[in-house]
Length: 300
Image (cartoon, rainbow, N blue to C red; front, side, top):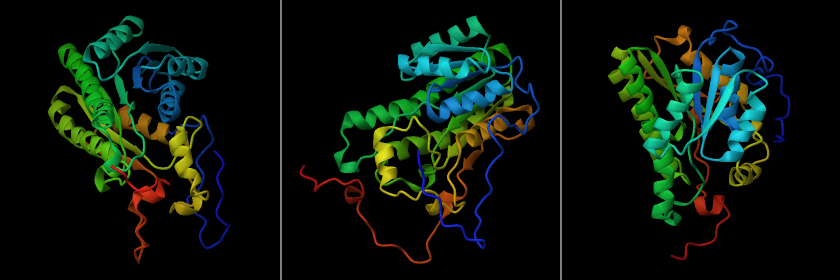
């Protein structure tokens, strides 16, 4: 996705660019002989996270309910290392158990679970149907819980340690006008990180959250791309004066799940260049969500 860079100003250089793709702060082979299961890992940020684990030696299992996403995962990740794909709707506990069974049969019990799969679309709250609300909450919150439960039950039974990383959103703290359904679900995910980290820590299972900022990628849905196009200068609207790159989220995920982050649990790491903490000295005019989304008056 193209982005208009801010006008260079020596007084405001912004945050520096990250190292090139393929770099890592962790030693080569950190995840050798480890199995990583990534939900929704065939596209977008999930795929970028999966790729960084693979570069560090992990065997990957990618779960998705869409065959085209599984094919995309195979194409993108197979050149990096061992990868298996499995069809799974994370709203269904039986399908989740089946996905774990497939992972065990192929590589062994996953050592790391990345709960990346979620559902989201922008909508004024008054336009949300009950089914739309349920769909987002069931996938984003309930699906994350069901996957986490399956992972933990198997590790507790086996007496083995494990690591869970839940991909969240910064409006879990702030609320998200236009995203009432997703913001509520992500707030539940953040709370679950903190709850399950305490419950499962004695079994050797760490649970953390990971929140991306604005990280454009080729798999963004049409509605998100349209919203971004309303503000063409994305970099200039970030305190870092640049957007994030997918690999930066992958690096953060690999650290949290690595032996070097094993004493970090119950924490949600925000990777957004401080954008969600930005405040104005004076409040800008309020623009109702319907107008921001280009929708006409509510007609009931």
